[in-house]
Length: 323
Image 1 (spheres, rainbow, N blue to C red):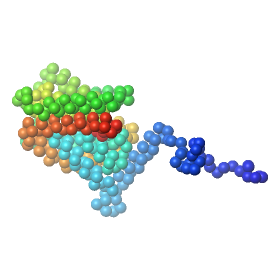
Image 2: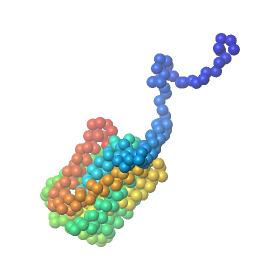
Image 3: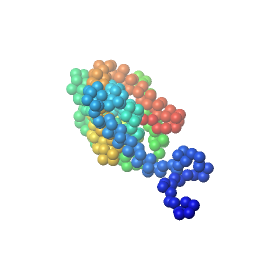
Image 4: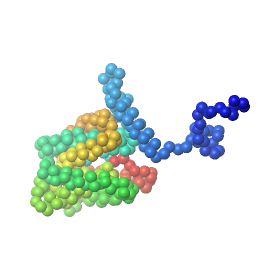
C-alpha cells in the first residue's frame, strides 16, 4: 500500500501525554486487583523456592533463606516460651525479611509457625517440675477465643485499623505499667476454680483476646495473660501456660482459613516453627525457674515495649508494625 498508510502496527502502548520520551516509566499504573494478584504470584514463587531442596547438599536443604528463617524461629520460640505469647511479633516481620513474603501472607504463615511453639511450650509448662497449667481453664479460654477470633475476622474490614492499633497500645501500656509496679499484689494462686463467675470471666477474657487477634492479628495472648494475673490473681507461670494452650485451637482454625485463601506459605512456616521449638524448650524452663515477681515484671516490660513500638509505628513512620 502506498506510503505505508495501510500497515497495521505490531504492538501499541498507551502513553500519557508528555511521556513520549520515556514510555516505560510513564505506563499506566496497575489496578489494585492486578497488584494483589502480583503479590499472590510473588508469594507463590517464594513458597515454591523455599520448599525446593538444595541441589544435593544437606547444608542447602532449607534454601538460601534457610538460616534467616531458622534465626527467626529460634528468637520467636524463645520469646513465646519465656513469656507465654505466640511470638507473632517476631515471626511476621521475620518472614517478610527472611522469605520476602507480603505482610498478608506472612500473617497467615505465622499461624503455622506458632502451632509447634505453642504445643511444645504447653507440654513443658504442664509436665515440668514446678510448671503450672490448668486444662479446664484453657478449654474455656479457647472457646471464647475461637468465638472472638471469628467475630474479629468478620468485622475487621469495617473498622479503622489505625484506631484499633492505638487502642491496643494504650491497653497494653496500662497493663504493662501495672505489672511492673510491685504494689498491691497478693499471694498468687496456682489453680483456677471453675465456678460460674470464673467461667464467665474466662469466656469474656478469651472472647476479648480472640477478638483482638482477629481484628489486628496480634496481641491477644498478651492481654489474656495480663488479665489472668490481675483479675484472677494467678501466678505468672500458670497464666502463661494456660494462655499458651488456649492459642492452639485458635491458630489451627485461623491457619486453615488462610490456607484455603492461599495466604499461607507452608514450608517457611514449618521451618520457622520447627526451629522455634529449639528456643521454646530452654525458655519455658527458664520461665519456670525464675521468681514469680521477676517473671511478672519481665512480662510487664514486654507489654510496655509493645505499646511504644506500636505507637511509634502508627504516629512516627505512618505504617502498621508487624505483629
